Length: 160
Image (cartoon, rainbow, N blue to C red):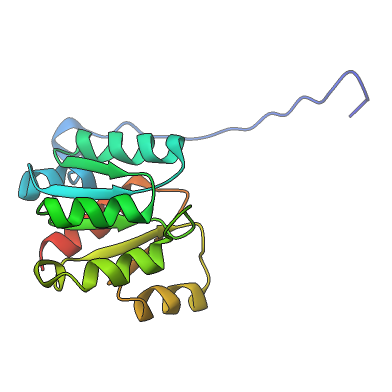
């Protein structure tokens, strides 16, 4: 390799064409599986970052869910008192009321005692997961959001 000139690489890959009858049938994507079974269910997405909120909302809506959003924990508590949700996706680090306190406040509402709340956070360590569970959350999903992981988690909690 020479600076300013670059390098040339060659490789040979031997592939064979699959016969149409023998071609594997792909399993439905996670979002399709979740949408087929849970289309129209309401999810509360609590996320203060506008970009993250729109990405996750778009994924969920594309998957057939009805999504309400809150930008902080206090808005989440207000929405939980006025609406019925099947699942809450809760960010942790937010202004005003954080995800831990919002979860405790939502859990105190009699109609939300069994509502699945899943942490959706960049905090990825085991101790972070333990703090989420101790605060009353049911599960923990890390960011950046991987669509298959998101839909797998949503599907699992909506099946319960």
